[in-house]
Image (cartoon, rainbow over all chains, first blue to last red):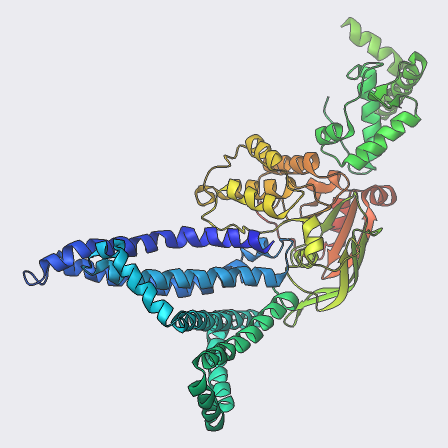
Length: 256
Length: 120
Length: 241
């Protein structure tokens, strides 16, 4: 059932994002051929307008990604589309999981697009990618220090954990707002701020100077361990938040 | 023939009456197959359970019988059909006489009137 | 399996301080068409939403086919809400796909056939459809399932009398005969003929739960007339005359 929900959520996501991702990449490519050719000749040229357009698209993409996550949850599960979703024969946690996975993937792709497009824009010689030597050097580097890959992997995990925590906070804030009889939007914003104050307080209290020192001791001996600890500290509150979201959807759902 | 339903009586009894009238009028000839419950119900715009009850009554009155393969068949028993026809006719006559009495006609006058009407 | 398809005990629901249902006890068997009748604000929609799990009771219990509301009961309930629930980017066929994915009892071909007979083009974008057409799509989604329990919230409010007949006929010719249909409405004279049972709701309580035949036999009047008598004191609010 979760897979079927994902199929539906990803289709909705694709309808909304295919255009903006495409636009970002296309504008980046166009810039590549106009921007660096014109340099030094005409500063206020088409190319700078195009650069502006590109930056606009990237900013729009970021804004859209954040609002997409909030929107899919509040409209899809707490709004009129919830009439459809909550009458499907699935558990509330499946609905939440599907939205969550879709949200994380959306952010990752948006991040990737934002990350890749400057490279597309730069006047790089792409033929280098086709050369054997380039890849051989990379492979050699990796085999000499295999732990780099692991570190990279852990770093990616941490980025995902950050996203999960952020999305979980959004979901919980929206769910708390949903509990109110009125001013739900305001309540959601307030509880989002409240949740972050809570998190910061929690972290500052748990990670007192003493604990940080202890952690640093571990860190010096093992960098992987410290990254994993960081991931765990991000994921534990995220998991608690999501559990609270599921509880609210299970017991307090109020589609009036 | 339209299905007419009044407000003050159970619907199923009215449906039985109207089914009988249709059988006598030859809408459903003797020995023919009656439409399925669902179809009849949709046609009359009533609940299938109600139509089912009306049809059960029809069977009880000997005007239809359930056949395992063919569904529900209108009876071929001429006597039964005739009995229903007379009963219905009697109801109409009674109503006619009652209304004529209200207009001040005696039974005899009321009885003669239809013949006059024919000759006009 | 349970003898009763719907069972409610001491059902109480309030929105904030405002009570919507005040102690409802109800048992409805399978294979019935039941009218949930009452003026606006009497708790009809609340009861239906409780049965499909869109809201939770404040106190009391309810069960569908002997089970608490959950994925199992939702798999056999077909719900027609009192509003549109579509995402606007979809086409009718996208929704049919969705329903086929999630409900084992959804018949895709039947849905397409019903669209044809209702004059709806299933490949049209929902965004481009008129309100009436969207309502038809929603009706198709609900009636193309052979569900155990159909919950129809005001299916005939806000449409003209011809469309009303049409909708009722669609319901009558398409519902699963072993299933129970619960229709909420305040337009009683229109649905009276199709009902087995009538439930009168007044201010969140059940005033009367009786078969339509019994009401007519005992009272010598139609359900509609009886309804008008019981609710005479209250100003009726019509929905879209």
